[in-house]
Amino acid sequence: MAGEYVSEREAVLAAVRRIVDEGLVAGASGNVSCRAGSGLYAITASRVPYHRFGLADVLVVDDEVEPVVGTGVPSSESLTHLAVYQARPDVGAVIHTHSPYASAFAVAGEPIAPVLDEQVVAIGGAVLVAEYAPSASEELARNAVAALAERAAVLLRNHGAVIATADLDEAVAVAVLLERVAKVCILSRIIGRTGELPADVVAAEAAAYRMMKGLRET
Image 1 (cartoon, one colour):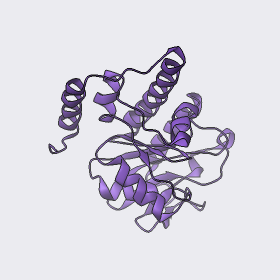
Image 2 (image 1 turned 90 degrees about the horizontal axis):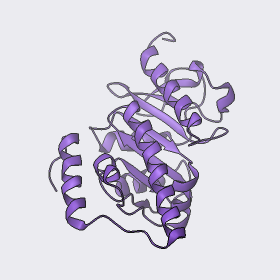
Image 3 (image 1 turned 60 degrees about the vertical axis):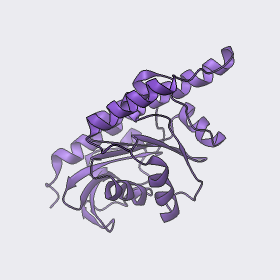
Image 4 (image 1 turned 45 degrees about the vertical axis):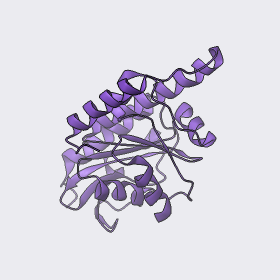
């Protein structure tokens, strides 16, 4: 089995290296996964520092978080990843980051308002904050899914962010965008205030997001 799911595991490893390069994670924080077939998911192992992270540190687990490929310990946030996949058939990749600016909003317990057009088109609107729950808990998984709803990103209170998209390339792009939007919001407050997009523009762009994702109208 060790030689199976190589392409999915390599895609996860490539995404890990990209979010490290972007400064969205450090040390052994955060985690990455993608679907690897029916009821199977390629996911990063827990507590492996990124400076020595390799293909052997990407596992394949089933719906019970039991390893199918690999001998390491699956990510401590595996429950959240699997809860997103189960709630969102459109999602093929999940990334959890501890990026500084997005995490600042998570610590403040404040949503990131819709301030940039690309934010709404790529994420679906404001980025909400999930209610606090202990890391790695089933409660955290439930709270994350509830606050995520149909959007592509959610903040975890006093923790970080979760990105949920069709594939890993898009997930990395959204993770980078989320951090930039969070930084822009903070800088705009230093200048004076944060101006949100007009409500009609947000509605139209959110509708475009749903259409692109194949999501039903709400």
